[in-house]
Image 1 (cartoon, rainbow, N blue to C red):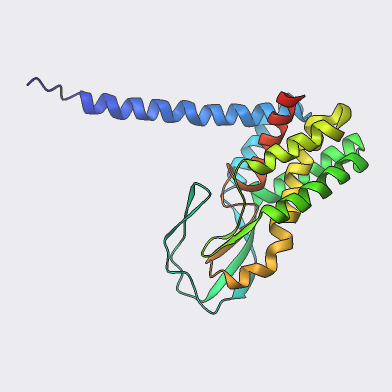
Image 2: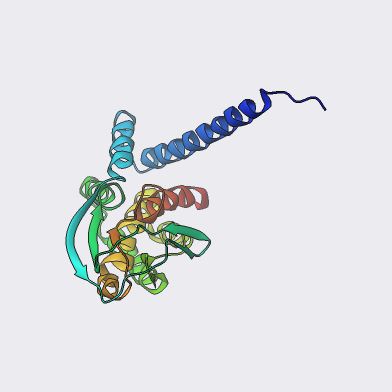
Length: 225
């Protein structure tokens, strides 16, 4: 049998090639969403960079005592696997994610001040708050979790229905603020019984949680519209 010693190297290079284009596709999708909501092209890269870097930054807010801590290192919920860090102290560190919460909130406020669509955005956000509150589930060892793709679909549908000429903006605002309030802030009291080492408002990373809801809501709203 003939064995080519370079075959394994080619497989590795091909894997990284596919991974590179996968990451680039995600970045392009996010950039497209930013452009859709009216961020000037010259600021899109800056907004994307701040979001990506900020996704790795969790600002501790408080410590919540726990009676028992989870012994699981991986938790599956709605098809996604969450890696639970090992934590010996019986407390949960409540933190806010910069890229997943603070940046989307600041962008939403800027869009509201720029467009003045307080009523439409307020109604859409209120509906999304109720929907995400109903969908949010406390997951032991993880925190508060949501089905990945249902909230963006709902936000897009609401935006198309009442957004008028501001469909992408209403989709982004309701997808971010509605999820932040309904899924995270209104469920903070449930964290004390989950035994999770860390509970991050806004998600643990860029491509999930509140940030992902806003981006997908914008793109889906543009598609529906």
